[in-house]
Length: 110
Length: 115
Image 1 (tube, chains in turn orange, purple):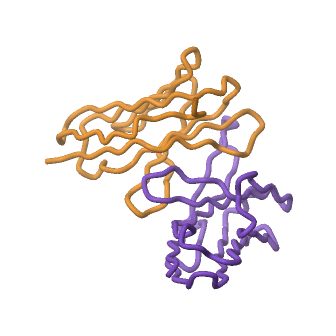
Image 2 (cartoon, each protein chain N blue to C red):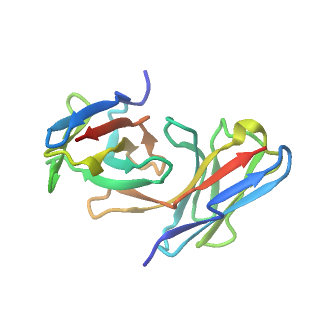
């Protein structure tokens, strides 16, 4: 079983749709969780940290479910500019080595 | 603005010709990383430094070497590039966030082509 698993997609959605991605992790000692956005041929950029209480930033909501060992990202009112790959990143306690999922591709069409 | 800078952005080298990629940061982060990323794949960690302590991933080929002469700079040397080394090379730094989480900041990457 891979340490961090994501559905690679692509998720193909119309503008205005709500879309959700999940990411599962295998290391129960993991302590920090992130969603990064990566545009084609660009570097990953931090989208959100994921806290135990969940967090929201505009149209984006991230949640953590420790019992089931997954994190989620919800995007409401999708924009064309949301088209990108979304990388799930998990870090174990005391480690400086994050583990990346392979990313989920999102395509928002008119 | 504080940032992670990589040079060059694009590098073309010949098969077997050594190449050096550079990374600098103005964030004063103590951890620096080098990743290799190929199309449609997750970034693959090659090395990381915690301050001056060098950490090599077990599956990083010997063909890849790294240097960190000071906090701000880090170099990736590919001694004899092969066609399979063509990829995007990403440098990243990290710091702990307000809740103890570890956030990484990436440079724009160097896209390496091997001919």
